[in-house]
Amino acid sequence: MGRGSGFGKTILFGEHFVVHGVPGIASAVDSAAEAEVKKSQKGINVTDERSGAKGYAEKKKLQQLESIERMLAAMSMDPKKVAIDIWLGGNLPGFSGLGASAASSVAIARAIAEEFNIDLPDERINDIAYEAEKAYAGNPSGIDNTAATFGGLIWFKKNMGGGSNTIEQLSIREPVEIVIGNTGIVANTKAMVAGVAERKKQNPEKYDAIFGQAEKLAHEGRKALEEFDLRKVGELMNENHRLLQEIEVSCKELDYLVDLAREQGAFGAKMTGGGGGGCMLALTPGKDLQEKVASAMEDEGFKVLRTKIGIQKG
Ligand code: PMV
Image 1: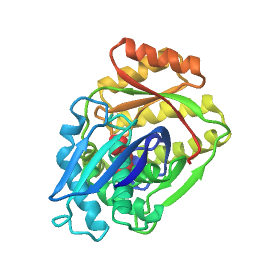
Image 2: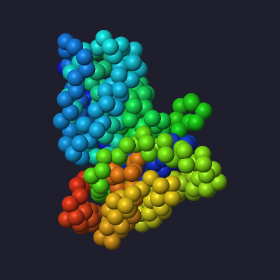
Image 3: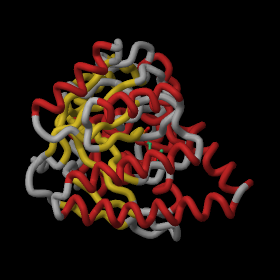
Image 4: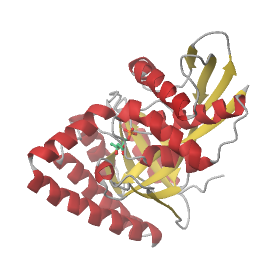
């Protein structure tokens, strides 16, 4: 049997903008998807035992199968001829917006490689997971699979010319507590990404100005993280949320959770990932603040993940 795992991630700055070449910052969280792969008799059979948003696994089933076929093709295997049983689990909940699809793709790619004795460096695993991501995101930036493969805190810029993307590991003084709040709405990243591209085409002036602000924010965010100025990081996250509202990818449930987190004292809060549902992220340094914000969301019936950003990989 082959085994593999992939990190979950949260985007601190720049989701959606990264698809169009603006830099973004993502951090792996201390939860991961795990996969086991066994050669079998016939077809590709997936047993998905990840916990999380009700209906997540069912809603993503077709995209998941397409993603596995894409992955096999990227590994020069014929999806029609391969017979494997795949088990998916781990402690990363299947919340939309946590990079669950990329984390599972990385886990599955590693497990397939192990089961078939193929030696693949992380760079290849990352490329294969990027192919798989196309099934979920249509035109993905690559930030999700990069964070899922390498872990850590990542500065990412897509090369719009098709060459290699810029990937830099950032380091911060110490890991910082965050709360991920889940709206419970299973979002369709592919549709959200396509929607932004369409509106950008319709309103180039408005969108170019917003994209320019997002670029500036990513650089300021990097500086604030590296200087460990967490108040500043929080303010910039708030600003990033406003830009995401302007490009119409937030929704009332995300805005509600973002407001709630700020009222409870979070340093900053924003949606994270594709939006239209899925998750938001609150910066809550220290266990006490993290607990205060997390339990306020739970009291309102939302599922949360208490985790940290800036955990060193390994
Ligand atoms: O919703 P998630 O976790 O799959 O994140 C998607 C991030 C986007 O920027 C919206 C798309 C991408 O490929 O970068």
